[in-house]
Length: 130
Image (cartoon, rainbow, N blue to C red; front, side, top):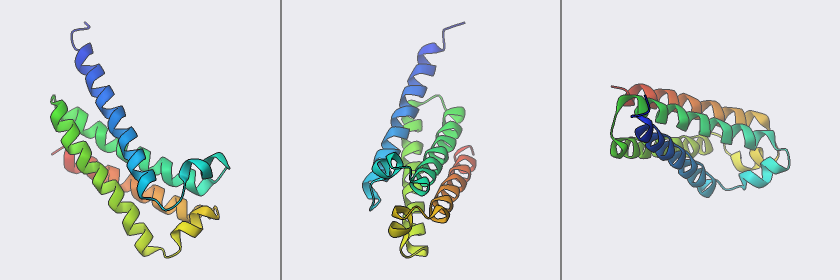
């Protein structure tokens, strides 16, 4: 009954580590301080960060379902991370003043980035499950 427990724990651990790495990378490339803004009650920052986390988790879940290899999980999870970061870059390009919008708690900015990050996670999940 518990013979697959070590594999489960390995995959959960690797997935949590990749999710943490994704959020760290996200906070390093953004020009504002998400955690400080979230602590201040900034809904735009929380929504954008939450969408990124959900999008990444969706992609990681798809990879984990389709492989027994932790190396594949890490490789494809890394690619999903790059795609999530590219979403942020694209949104910044499409919405001039994005930093100021997030810092001013303009929820539309956060919702836009959050939903596009979730959409990218769904697209990644579909592509990664082939």
